[in-house]
Length: 383
Image 1 (cartoon, helix red, strand yellow):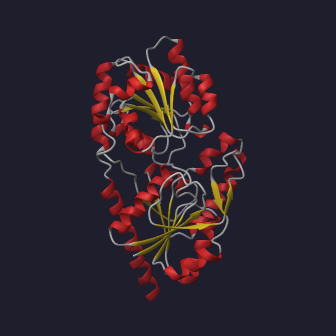
Image 2 (image 1 turned 90 degrees about the vertical axis):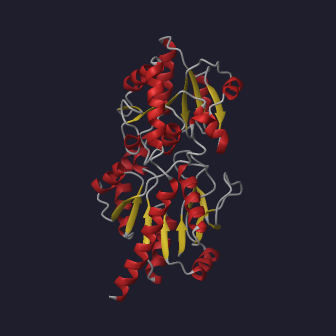
Image 3 (image 1 turned 180 degrees about the horizontal axis):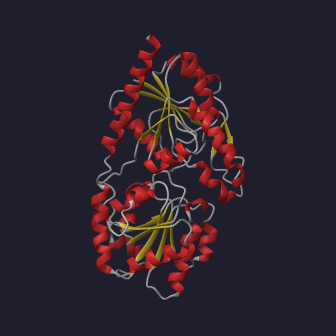
């Protein structure tokens, strides 16, 4: 197959979207398929991308003070020529933006099927930037955009339910994310790493791993850590990631350890060397960091919201708390910190559950989605 992939983020930000799409491209190429990726240009890409990447014109994100994100504005003449010469069998849209709309116009003219994957719960971010009034407008745009897509691949059933409830009637198919169990596992725990970070061997480390941005629930994390400290609950805080909230968090949590952005084996070591994962974000579509924490043997305390609530088994692998409910997050975290037997039991159960999410079988699923769509679309043209 020849797949044209259009995305607003592929290499300029190292987040769950870009990492998942790069993994998809590597998998497809290993299976003998050809992929041409179209996305924003970056002078200083955050990751070394997979596959053949075609840069398109873009501008910095105009709202939310998030200049690190780029917004593609069109395909551009050079990229359009490469797309036409490539002659894809299917178009895959990863972002509902202007680039995606241009790709839809091309696909209609070329009579090839269009599918999409849903990675970001856009409307859940709006309130964090004082833009909640935009939600009806955004949903209207998403309904129009995905109406042109024959299938939409959604990472969790809970996220699919949200899309359906808001009027998106394309065929919604589940495409979960997986975890590299050979990389993220309890064996990566390192006392040497802990000591280097300033942790004692018997410290109980509460970790947060993600971008340090407001929509990841960091206000709740901060308040929980402050209350644990005020109440004399023995713990240490670890924040892995980078972002615009770092300075504010350093001031609010002076005893916390900040590692900055980590990846690969360094990230796996940080996960496994903690003791509890506290992740209050209620904006996830899947919760990849939650799955990586579970694979690393960490009991997880997460928001009872899209994504994470399908990964965490309450009372077995961790706890779920109502979004933004500081009291609930505090009591769940304290319960795990103060019960060593519970931590050990939840750690073992978390690893077992995480192993259910195998990347090869998950990538095979989307390969089959492509093949079936190409065949079905061709049959409809010939009918």
